[in-house]
Length: 127
Image (tube, rainbow, N blue to C red; front, side, top):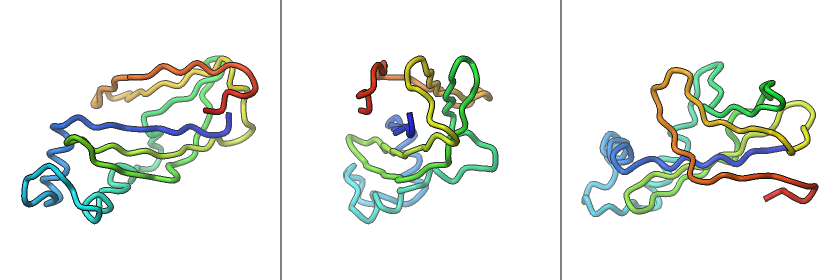
């Protein structure tokens, strides 16, 4: 495993708060212009020192370090902000078999719902 692609889909209420706070969608039609969407890109990637992105990658119970966010992208669909970013595995790339990825906020401030479980097996499992 060399990278993780992480997607955060914010709920409608939080998305509304963010767009309202930023003065986006002034006509209240629920559609953002390309420029408005572009202004959101990276809004959730300005992390404080030591923040792990609420993503923990474990190999046999040991945490594997990940890079900060790369290749950040943002969309707005059906009233929801959806962001995506790439995280590189730092150090030697571990065998993907048996790795555990956890969305986890140790402060319990943020609740996460995992909507897709992925099992990786074999040499050609890069999807």
